[in-house]
Image 1 (tube, rainbow, N blue to C red):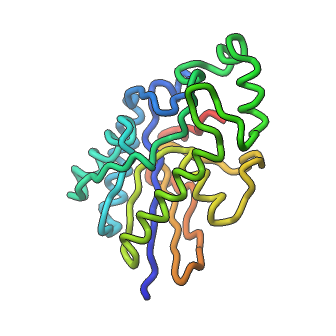
Image 2: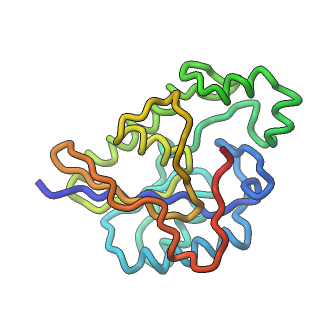
Image 3: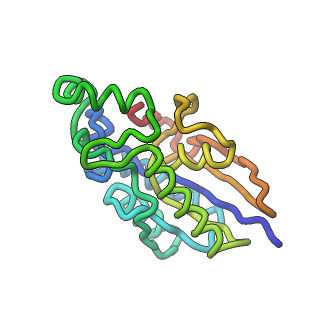
Length: 212
């Protein structure tokens, strides 16, 4: 059995990333910087070989994937399982606006209560279950292949927790950059983290972390 290689990419910087607005399953356009990030990312990924590219079906991921596709000639396959967490009534708002309008919701969110379900949204447990089932399905279908996944910060967080068995209730202590390259491999159910947070391809473009 050959190794399966999974390269996960967080989409390029968006207008709401800059404004510090929680996006979730809502969308905002890539900024000019985000478009440039995707272009530089596409150049780097051209030198790496992939069998398949699968993207979240949300606009910011699709736009990033389309730019990569224009360079690599990989077809963009959309998969809803790779969407960001649904943050319900908090989406589109800044941390300050959420604190003012929904202080109890923000409290539950910040305390990382695993079963706490945001109104009109997903709990951490629901989100993690959706994402990990989707990732395992993709890996099973493309076993032994090199898989390129264009997705979101929350999905990358789930991947790390799945591989290293980090509790969902624990605060994230690692950084997730826009347009970063993150690579895992697996064989016989044994996982390896091969590369994390690689932004060398972005050159002098300022790195932009997701809203914590």
